[in-house]
Length: 353
Image (cartoon, rainbow, N blue to C red; front, side):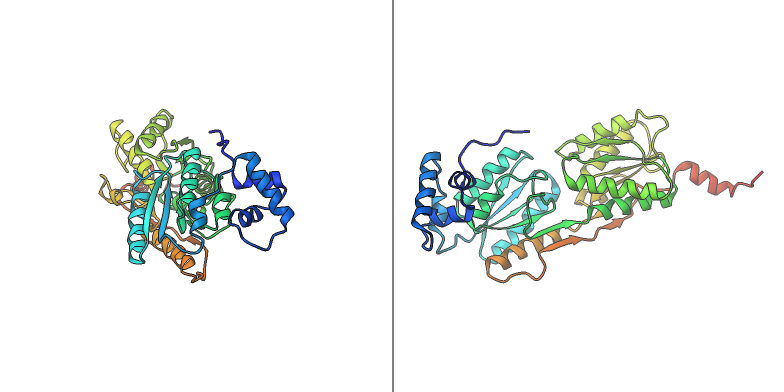
């Protein structure tokens, strides 16, 4: 794990002065209604630590920059590219500009970008967290910057959030494959240090167990969630004997990579192995065969996310601030009943001896 920066933060000042972060913020912004001895103690801590207040943000307390920061983990992911496009559109319509920060799934870079956004005096931040814990949230809170989380909600965040119901996503996939007659079902999961990956896998496995079966083998993609990582994970699953008859991939890019490995091995989709993804990105329906997937409306999530943030910034507090979107299974040509199931149905039911 990357090491935290040693640059002094407002939290460090608060700890040394034995006061709250809010008290430090009051002193930094030269606001009244604070005891002289407390102010002196905070100023002494600031000097001792060499803390540099966010001067730009402080100077804008009586105004607004009409700027929003969008922080995502991988802009090459079509999910986040679509999100950025939607956010920019609605922000522009409301007279705001957007600054995009791409963290490359790096915690230290994410923390640095949060500091840059705070120092730049942005009015609000829309973010997709890199991991289950997000560094730098205390800086945003201390600066009074309004935030909304999308898709990945860090454990140390309690503000407005919009995400997919990832447990139900796993349930829908398992039910679909089990209803087709599959019993050897493998999973290519996302990184286990993300709650959404664990939720999708747990919903999937719990549903299989509820049908009286044991979950199949699991391989994992890397933090890129890329087609390449799906291809590599599928290569491992193809070494298993007997082969799984169905694969649940944690997102569409991983699924597309897995389909490439299956085809390269001389196997047919879905005749030999069925494949299901998650997201319903634009390329999913143009695969050969078209990819069965769980749709989460990227446009709906991004639209409601930016509208929620804009409502907060314009002093129109939204009615709902914690929303889990219901997933929808989109069945296409990459899933079918397993061959042994088809043969059994063609021959008719077995007669007990």
